[in-house]
Length: 371
Ligand SMILES: [Zn+2]
Ligand SMILES: [Zn+2]
Image (cartoon, rainbow, N blue to C red; front, top):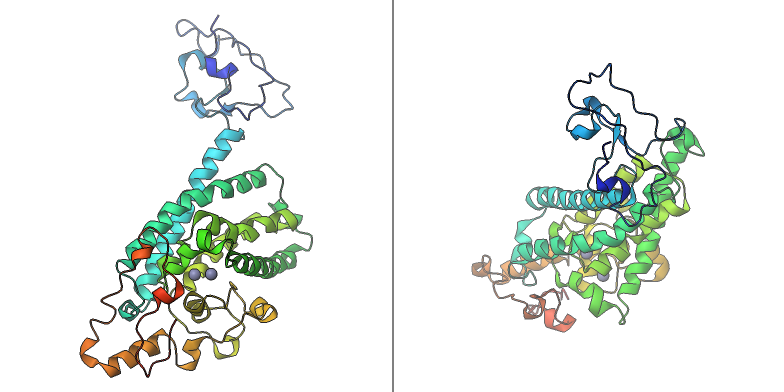
């Protein structure tokens, strides 16, 4: 009689309920018994039920004692659908996905959209790009911990995510409407959470690190304190628990959200004229980094207008960072390459930031203040 390996009867994952069927497999001799003459193992469960084992095609890489049996535990963290295996998979996928989105789109935006002239701005910090990347890469794994907990609840079926268009309450139009409502819902949620993070009880501890970057680059987009990063992503994760959402739509929106977050830090202030005061673009968010108490929104200016925190971007009025640089150059043409050479921020080296006034750069008399 061959005794099954210990992991068959002792699940690796403490979240797994004890297996319903654990018993020794019928003996399988390696010599003398052919596949035809070998007795077929008896079904270990009701055939109508999902077997708790993984089918291994061709029985490749199966321990000798299990050859001939169609189902085996893969070992390690247990079979597909097992909680610890799902958590581990989600943790790996979430981290790799977020990192790939951040580095890929951040790099593309940095080299093809971001105006490198902005690095000469007096409020652009020394080694800022590497500091932004370093801060983001260190934060993302921590942000992923509570995020994975929510993804886990979704995978376990506690959300209203659905697989097929037929499951949509209103077919394709329901999918389209869910995209719009997702954007408006998350825009509202982020507005209030972001505004709350500016409250003196939370600002210094959680949100200040993101305001280190006065003249942000695309790499500042994910450079948040983990609590800040998770809190601002919370509306995205709450939505599918409240409203039906197609799984692929959710994935597409997740990618869109990451790209949008990068885009509002890319220093490209162009927005179609008609939408200038409707869409919360890079010009709006740049003023948020510079002036703090304005333009908390993510996609739209709607909640800033309702909440009384809307500010028409200075760059739309000829007073933005580019105008500031232009005026500095006009005032001292010889200093054009050295603008911003003395911008070390001693308070920011460990991810904290100096106060608003400490961050202000010296401003020529005839140039509108940027801070
Ligand atoms: Zn802020
Ligand atoms: Zn920002």
